[in-house]
Each structure stands twice: as C-alpha cells, then as structure tokens.
Image (cartoon, rainbow, N blue to C red; front, side, top):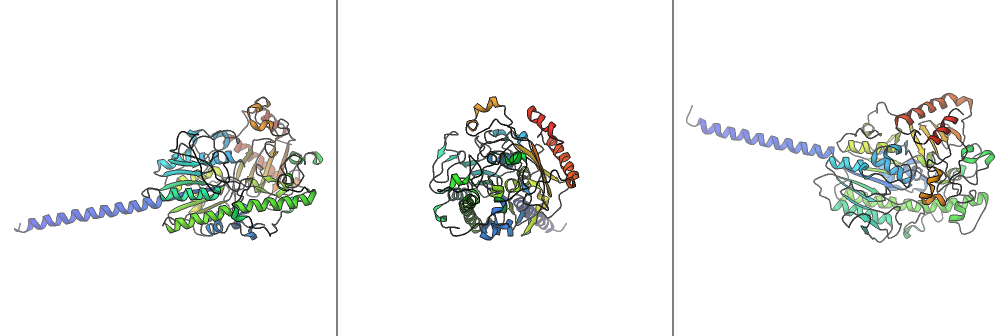
Length: 539
C-alpha cells in the first residue's frame, strides 16, 4: 500500500459517512414532510339547524338571495355532497352519532335528554392517538363533560345568543367551570377558534370541532343584520299553501282530523304552536297567516345564517393569511336540516328531506378537485371514520359508519349502502311530531309512523317535557308513506297505495328490516312498539 493510501481511505470513509448521514437526514425530512401531508389539520365546522337548501351552492328557491357567499366559494374550491342525511333529526342524537360513528341504539342516545357516555367520545380519542391536538369550541349539547378533548370551551346546553357563558377546561371542575363573554355567539365562537389556533404548537396537527349555536331558534341575530332582507320578499314553497296528496292518517289524521294537532305550523293551523302566535304581533288567519309568518320566520333565520357565513369568511381569511389554508381540511355541515315552511311545518324531527338532509362541503386541496359534486348516499355515522382516515388512521371496528375517503380521492366506493336508515323517537314532544322510522334510497323514501313514545307512561313524570305538551301519552294513527323522489322531489304525493310501486315498496321494506337488524335498531327492548310494527308491517 502506498504511504499516502491510508489517509486517503480515511478521508473516503469519512466522506461516505457524511454522505450517508445526509441521505438519512434527507429521507427523514421527506418522511416528515410526507407525514405532515398525511396528517393535515382538520377543522370540523357545524352549525345548528342549517339546512342545505339555505346554502346558495345547493340551489333551490333561496339561492337567489345569495345568503352564503363564503360557503359557496368553499364548495367551488372543494366537494359538495348532495345526498347526506342524519339518522335522527334532532340535536343531541345527531351529535352523538357524529362523535361516535354509531347509530342511536348502539351509542345509547335516543333523544334530547340522554347524555352521551364520556367513554364513548370516540372521535377525539382516535384523533389524539394519531398525534393530534384536539379541541371543541361552541355548542356541545351532549350533557357530560367533553373529557376526551385536550381543550374545550363549550356552551351550557343550548347556550345564549348574546353574551354567552361557556364551560372552559382549566377553569375549575365541571360543571362549575363557567366563564362569561360579550357579544353575539357567532362572533364570539369564531374569535375563540382563531385564538385557539393561534396559540397552538404548530409542530403537531390539530383537530378542532368548531360549533355554532346559530341558526337555531329563536333566531337572535347580531344587530348589524337588522336591515338584511328587510325589503325582500322571500320565495315561498308551494306546499306552504296547497298539498292535497301529501301525508297520511299518521300525519294528518283521518279526513284531516289531526291537522290542527300534528306538526308545529307556520300558519295558524296548529292549535298550540304556530308562528302566527309566536312571531307576529297581529293575528291573521289562513293563507295570510302562512304568508306573514313565513316571511318573518325566514328573515330571522337567514339573518342568523348570514352571521355564520360572514364569520366563516373571517376564519378562512385568517387561515390563509397564516399559511394554514393549504394543509387544513375543512368540513362544513349542520347537525340536521330544517323545515323552512315546506308542508306548513317548522323545526326539524321529520323524515322529510328538508329536515333529515345535512349540508356537507369539504375543502381538501391536496386531495379534492375543486367544484366536485357527489351523490354518494352518506349519513352522519360516516363523518368520524372519514376524518380518522384523513388523519392517517383506520376506522375502528366499533364504528358503524364507513369512511368515504375514496370519494374524496376521486375513486369509487365498493359495496356502499343503497339506503340510509332514520328514526325519530320523541313522540309528540316539543313540536307535535309522531314517532316514526324509515329508509331513504337515492330515488325513494319509505316512512312508517308507529305513533307511540318508547318510554312507558309511568316514566313520564321523570322528564320536564311530559307536562309541557298536550296528549304526550296518546298514540297517533299508524300509517305508511312512500315517495318517488325522482319524480316528486318535494314529497307532495304519498304513493304508498299505488299498485305501480308495490314492488319497489316491498324491496324497501326488506332493506329496512335488514338494516334494523344489522344496525342494532330493532324494538326487542320495546315490545309494545314491536307489536305495532308486527301488526302493521304488511298493511
């Protein structure tokens, strides 16, 4: 070996080690970058009672009013889902299904009064396991402390529209950890979300559930919106006035005998709850009461919607100005839909589309081609599995919903559902809606009104609502309704007894029976209801 060979070999080995180190560091950086891409920030935004048909991007009679320009831009840059439905159109059960990925009988939350078991706060648990900072800000409405989140600041119950109080983590033991605020709730909740995001350690991804109170009734908007739509005539649904073939004896009674009792009305139709009495200073009758009540209702509702949309624009601009927009998935939805005068009804609870349909708009620029529209049949149990997969995880086996990430990637979903199950349990409570269940496919809907509360009358004394509403213990008529949604999208013509539809009705009954069994949604625990189902299944 030449005299200078050994030093040269040492220098060569040192160079090899340095190059190897650089390669390892480069690979580590690439892996870290890939990991960051696999784990985007996720903001799940949910408004209360924001119906899809009150969002411009969804079209319909209200779109000409341009109520939601910021949400419309979000849809134009992402994906908008047309067929998204809750499985129970009421706040607490819908929120429980979203956070658990489970249907009501599995997660235990059937109505507004049942708290979600803290151990079943599954979505934030899974996100924390995936390395996310987790928080919920705004409306919670699941009664128990949001213990699975790293941080929370949530409204007590429904909360107040103005100067809302919050339960805040770190301010004492629940439920005594109350703090106050000033301002309109939509503004305050947005401020809190921005403050939370700004204070985060950006070395790890964050998952934020950002929940507005608006536009839940009683529709208290910020003062700056008092003139919004003041001189505008809001387009009205024809079914507010005329719908001779809609419904059944389960919703209208024999020969219309229950029309003054079932379903809180816009007009003066309902004897106990109607917007003629609740919203108008002067009293009107018939079509005039419907017209005036509707105009008052929609303007109040849309002013709250406008406040949400303006605040979303503020949040989105903040994300963009702070370099977070491109690596943040934004999911926008409502906890259910809302009857906005259709069938002379207000509130939700019903299985009619305006009530059970949820808006769903997703922004994910690294994955979604802007302006995409999907007709995949989704329900609210699918939200958690999808966000978990977006975060780099896999949907846990205990969740009954399914991830639709393939759709976000522009791929087909295999073996997807052809019908989605629905059930409203709270018979004649709050808005005089009879208990019912059913199934909706893309083109058809089958509803069974069994008309009985799931609790025995002996238990009613335990609940505040039992003394608030007329006839709570009374069963209402049993009936089926069937709608051909392709030819009758506004559900104006009940075709259950039409011979031309008997084959498809039987197919829907078979699917309904199958899903009730598979999803743990049968009535084995409620034998009186099961007896009604058995007796009238083949009516």
